[in-house]
Amino acid sequence: MNDFSELENELRKLRPAQPSPVLFERVGEALEDSTAFGVADARSSWWRLKETTNNWWSLGFGLAAAAVLILFAAVSMEHRREQQQAIAQSSPEPATRPVPLGTEPSTSRSKFVPAGGTNIVYNARDEGLHFADGSERPVRRVRYHTQQTWRWRNPETGASLRVSYPSEEIVLIPVSGQ
Amino acid sequence: MEPIASHENWRNCFSEVAPGLLLFARQWVQSAADAEDIVQDAFVKFWRRNHDIGNRGLLYAAVRSLALDFIRRDARRTRREATALAEAEPVVEPHFELEDDTQSALAAAVESLPRDQREVLVLKIWNDLTFNEIAGALGISQNTAASRFRYALTNLKKSLQPQ
Image (cartoon, rainbow over all chains, first blue to last red):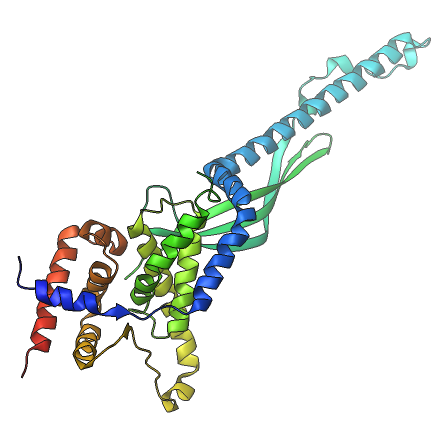
């Protein structure tokens, strides 16, 4: 059929050197270990699906928590103000009553402004080479565990609010071959 | 779906492909022990990623990628140990189980091929990959794979001709 069929047959007669029995044992053990690992792997598959959105979720949860805390702080301050007003109104000596708080702008005291944030990486793990779905080029996956902290401050009252939460970040670095 | 279900299939698959995978890894790595480590890592990672057992191109790509990583790491180590290695006799472990002088000559001719031709030859002859799979494994076009294979055979034929 072609000029090289004889040569190809000769080449096929060459038998590659056999791997040592130890290699088969080691791979067998790795597959056995993974019987338990299979469950973990199924989970990790789920996490792989989620990994691209993980950061956004944690950021979203953090911001939601911050919003709830700000709301609580605002409601609490409003409640305290109402109590003060009620006490003041029931006072038998209105002459000694302090300046009514109702005359102040109600929003100025509950304004929190962002005062900064930190993102501390406390663990970085190289998870080796992986193939992203549908990709034929490997990428190196590095997993970072971080602690993110966001701070807000009320410039008028001096009150501050801090939200801190753990975060996980997965970075995929393309690996180029030569 | 679950890796447990196809456990035996994977084990059998490894038994079948291991010699070819090892030969492929040794296109970059001289030591058979290092090549075995690379093959083990690549196969286990391939399995853990739940890749299709039939997607052989990806498996060979993983071996190649790990072998290239190993070379980079090993180059640094080699530089550190340069003096010691310069005095030592290089140990070359055979890539093939040779039966006679003809096979020895053929094996030597294969090993003297340029690496890009040799890796295509190894994948085609001893791993039975299609040109399409070879292209996927090496990140080249199918035509390039086919032409490298043809160049390899041409060069082998030339080098085996009596002088």
